Image (cartoon, rainbow, N blue to C red; front, side, top):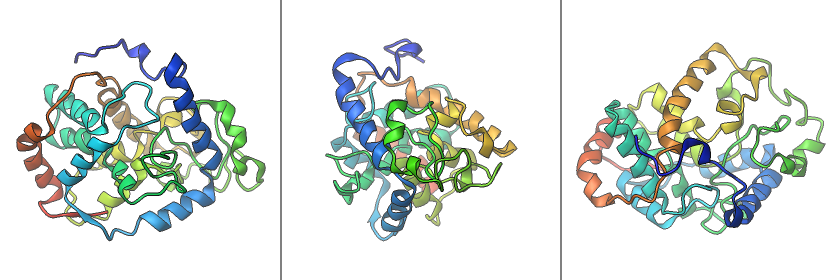
Length: 274
């Protein structure tokens, strides 16, 4: 798999001119994503009452650039195509190619998002970026850990301990993560009656931005044996999600003939309720 940069050059959050915008994104995210905020966002956005075809959602990501990404300054749909094509080139299963293609489609939330919620094009702190667990202490493995103290929950005894509101060894699926595109798309697809994406693919979608866990090694107190399998799946997917980012451009319409039949195989041909 070819990459423009060496692996160690990716996710460099201290490289000059991009740092100010990325740092400000994470400052907002860390200071505003509280336990109550996440619960409110789930109640607000998981209504599943907005029909949209998958390929229409792909086209909408032509208009979105992820402000939290230090490695790519292209419309997000290009990142999806780069990931999917690398997975395809390596001869991985068709469902995994599909996951590569759609793993960021939850960012389509910006279409009905708001600046106030951080879910718009202008304010993306509730849409994109590395996620963390809300409702318990924030680890220093978060990007820009100096912003952890800005989170109001860290002054609340209910939420600022290692376990917070959770039970030991409860498992990742019982945790509330910072609100964003991962959890949104996961819930949309979990609610979709025609979804046949395997469990591994759904885990890849749900946890690919959970870097403090899968790469930072935090949150051991919550983990179960099942989560060890989750981590293997995520790290397998992560090399296609992260290390394929490059200036190379793909034609979305040209990719449609190959990928749309795979999408219909696993998600059906009808609209998805968002």
